[in-house]
Image 1 (cartoon, helix red, strand yellow):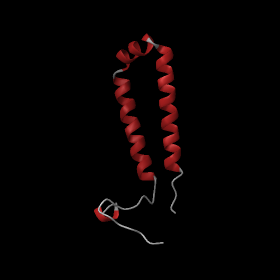
Image 2 (cartoon, helix red, strand yellow; image 1 turned 60 degrees about the vertical axis):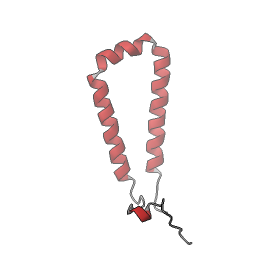
Image 3 (tube, helix red, strand yellow; image 1 turned 90 degrees about the vertical axis):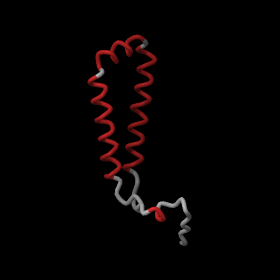
Length: 81
C-alpha cells in the first residue's frame, strides 16, 4: 500500500498517527470535568433557566448526553490498523 503525503497530511507537519486513544479519552474527560465544574458554579442561575421550559431543556440534555456517550464509544473503538 502506497501512502501519499501532501502539504495537508499530518506526517508532513510532524504529527503522529493516533496509535493510542487513551490520550484523547483523557482530554475528553478533562473537558467534561471542566464543563461540569462551570455548570456546578453556575447552578442557581442554570436551575432557574432550566425549569422555565423543563420539557424542551430535558430533551436537549438527553441528546447531549447521548452524543457524549456515542463520541466516547467511537474513540474507544479506534484500534491500530
